[in-house]
Picture (cartoon, rainbow, N blue to C red):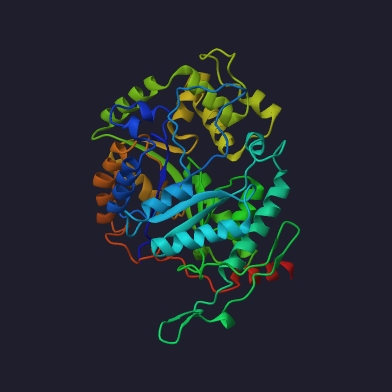
Length: 449
């Protein structure tokens, strides 16, 4: 059977191009309203996307005390947003980002159990550990946790959440109105999680989620993040712009998973892809120039400095990006390293690098026709570089509509993308099995052995 693509839609205020909110087709006055998000979610569902993904930040984005009021900002609470969208969609998976660094397991487990029931089994949790000191200042702390500690806490967090979701047996709900028995207490047990990070008694107040657990998603690209993903993730959002790098990432992830007793078919790997589409190449590249012209220089340099964690405000826009100087000062993140590689390959100036990062924040940026994009996506799939893509339109909703109306039919005609949803739950549509009770704890037991 031909391998099938999976598609996620990554929503972002105004679009993934930093100036997307300025495009004339973007309803900038509606970026905090339901109509905008409902339109985008229903477009994605019409295109048979697997899921709708909402990111999160726990601080106001700025750099070095500079906040530029030239960005499109509407970072709504992810859980509130997908809760509302569950009532205006039927098949689309709904993935929300919540941090293990600044929350507690019982509250997170309760929220996602509720979301899974309300959506009919379509919830997913993007599990993140938060590294920014600016976020720590909003949570009664002076600085962020050390990376090793964050990931230890993250593993304990997932352990506690899965134990809470598993505290109800699937058969615990009786609902016998005549006999007056709603549930069977004998089939409900305490979570009894004890670790260096948490003590959680349980049981959860909600029945076991429809999917057993919400789909667990992870997006870290650092070595600890990749190790964490190999242990925990069922879907991975990643950022490679070159097929060889993506193929290596997927192969190494599968190898790491084997070390935890997991199979490759237990995860779906979806690199970010930001397509700017025109009916001709010339039209697409003209759109790229128009969007580039909408990037205010302050915003471009701010975004570049934030991504690289290196101040560039006092440099000339026409200077070459100081790649070696940046590398000598600090080890770049995975996304920053991708940007530095591209800057070296393309000999980018600071202005050119700012335009590059403005397009897709170091994810794979494509400019061309629907046919050319379908060729790229099929090549990546057939050559083992991915299981699908997390689509990141430069601006909404117009570019998403172009993708749905012109790229999706091409993928369907080539037999690599669904024409109808396979099931009702996110797990079914991603081809993931429903976890058995205490599955994560058994995994940890194998690791301890």
